[in-house]
Length: 270
Image (cartoon, rainbow, N blue to C red):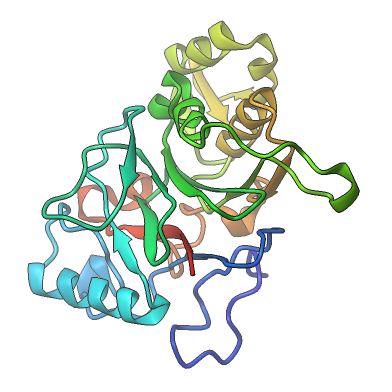
């Protein structure tokens, strides 16, 4: 099965299995999505579990995070994610994790970071490369407006430069539960359609009454388009991006339950 995007071929800094987003980010912006490869965790957490709240050995998680920090040469700021809409403004890392589901960084060397294991990580950057953000988009946060908050956190941006192909905000969508695996109830479908009628096209009837198969990447693209973000890249809903269907590469809470680890998507300025 093909990888969703090009990895870092032969890089001594991190495993070739990690994903480097293929997006038109300006010079000075770096981004990365980890996989299960490259860590020390064992069992169901093998091997690069970055979540410190899922029951893994704390020492293993600390070593995994150290390896990530060393590999990227920047400081990942992990959030306490609660499926909400708050966007944390990151400066120099402090004690404790901010409680938020999105983060904005404008200082070099600070990596806006979200952890996922079926939810959709969205990385954002401004066209001038001065600001970057990451958002954790499960269905609850997406429906409630986490992307709207993340994009609003960029504040006033430079006008679009049509001649240079610049855009106000550029987005990349990482791996998540795919549209053939994400079964939801009537209430989830209703929440999205109440916001925008066109969301109905992102749901297919499930095998049971009152159940639907939801296309999370498509719902996210709709939201971004409505926010005026026209440059959207990454996850197109195809099988290689599905966390549930690729157990050797991605953690999945839906597939593995409470013992699932977490991988991360990060974006930072150099």
